[in-house]
Length: 379
Ligand SMILES: NC(=O)c1ccc[n+]([C@@H]2O[C@H](COP(=O)([O-])OP(=O)(O)OC[C@H]3O[C@@H](n4cnc5c(N)ncnc54)[C@H](O)[C@@H]3O)[C@@H](O)[C@H]2O)c1
Image 1 (cartoon, protein in one colour):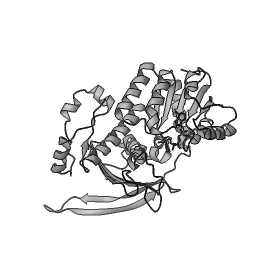
Image 2 (cartoon, rainbow, N blue to C red; image 1 turned 45 degrees about the vertical axis):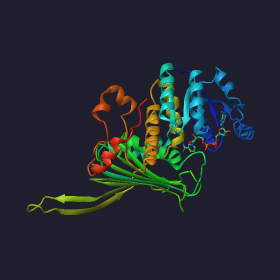
Image 3 (spheres, rainbow, N blue to C red; image 1 turned 90 degrees about the vertical axis):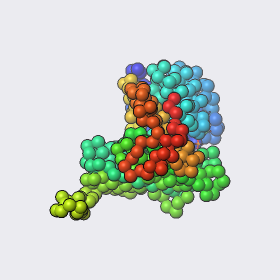
Image 4 (cartoon, rainbow, N blue to C red; image 1 turned 120 degrees about the vertical axis):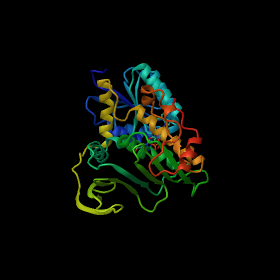
């Protein structure tokens, strides 16, 4: 644990990195010690803004500097595993932008390296620190919505097309991390997608998830939409919620639903439609990125795991891989194994839980198809 001011290095100063630097300089008892990018122009530009930081284009210099306690990585996804592993080997705590790494195998290797050295490894799932997401988590935990029947989510915009990625790799980690925070690991994932503009680059995807509780989820992701939409609807037995991240009232809670009234005679189903109040709960005004980095720094100081833990990062990448496997099998549902921690607690779970868990309403054909597919291996 570190009693003095903590020294941070931010590596990668492209599109997202400068946001990390801006949030990191606001943190208490920390110092942005070094900025690093292989691109001289980007490095110089940030250097002009933060004159107290040392500048380097050589990552090895960051690793060799004993004054640096922790490294924040905002480099391309393909570099995450290599740069994070080297940082952990050099004894540095690591914050790495989402997703944690390119594959579950890479994530598991990073987790092992961090655990072995007692270092904090944290993926940057910023939405876990967003006030609307936290508010909805509280409502779910307190059962305010009642049984959650289903959830739909739309995350679409025009661009940015990334030839080395897909809309699933780019955008799904946001929805998957939020869903993981709210509902835990799903039982199965299925996905369809297409490459509308650049051959081979998926730019629109529709992903379904099913949970052991019976909750169903549908996610629409696209880089090809006329307007930006960030909208999630949760339909519970007691209440419904609309979370619109582009609205100045991002969370609205509807006291609306359908109640089944005690039947008067056999076979009769009488329904009563509830149309009650709409509430817009008060939300914290903290900037998610600042709260996220504060959790990173505090978890180092307090020797505890951050909310956006490396295990969460691994589960998110597992969901991405399951969606991609489903794409490969033309949208067939892919069962997800238990998370790393669940497997450790209950090593027999895989056998007792083999194949596709049957959800209420899921077709037997889909279940059979999924049970024949490879499930995502747990590292
Ligand atoms: N949390 C969010 O909402 C959010 C939003 C956008 C991007 N991201 C994540 O941020 C990361 C970076 O994305 P981006 O869009 O900023 O990418 P980018 O390509 O714009 O920037 C990456 C930077 O890293 C530098 N770099 C690459 N390898 C390096 C190395 N070995 N040493 C030093 N510098 C190196 C590049 O020169 C470049 O300036 C990705 O993981 C992405 O998923 C997160």
